[in-house]
Image (tube, one colour):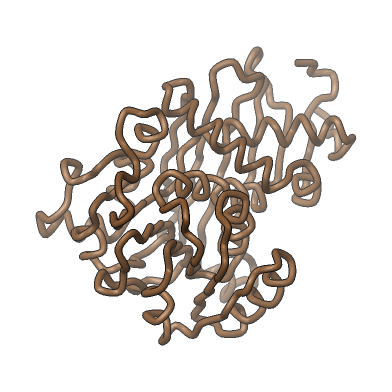
Length: 329
């Protein structure tokens, strides 16, 4: 790869112009397959910052790729009230895999949401029923929006419900994405969530709240639940009474997912109770869904294969389109 251009800066708008949601879903699957085949190196850790929040450096490299990445994600929940600033931020540095020199600085808020929605969609295509047509999404923010945009590329959805603690956010989600995607979307008050959970094939929890949103008794046979938020989002028996529990990486989810911590303290769930880590399923070492009736719970915090495929593709497309700003190095 030529380094003559120096360091390329890509804004959020540059990133959005450089990839489609459909492309991201395909790249995410390729990245997960590479991870499952042992062709991706990566790591991450959570660094506490004075109790105010955390910064998570996150790295990855796919064998044969020209670029490696380091992504930082920060989460400071007090920002909106204290400073009027966002709770989260994401930035990526891409490095030339031959020299280790940086070639791109990328704003990555939109790419993070895109990768997460694409990744969950690929997972759901293996673990949810193929005929899944009704989905409930908890969380009407950017992640909730991107997940629905991605899901339509693998599922023929007929009804969508969106639940948010802020009614206006759910209403705006329903209006805007219903028009964008041509889908019937119903905003649902938090207190009415049981009604829609009971009729849903796929449930996604994508919140920063800290309360159980889903009870085991509400789940119909065959439901797929993706628990993806930061704090407790599901009752403990959703996990203990599921037919299969799949995680993306046990080493990372065990200490960070409140439900798993509580169950470990009670001696009710540990690594031996897992069905599989997700890369083992896509690699064929473990089965995915084996019956129409299975209730499958997926718990994830993110792994590196998807980013290792997605971020270099964004960079190459941006360069081909002449996007971004060259920074002096």
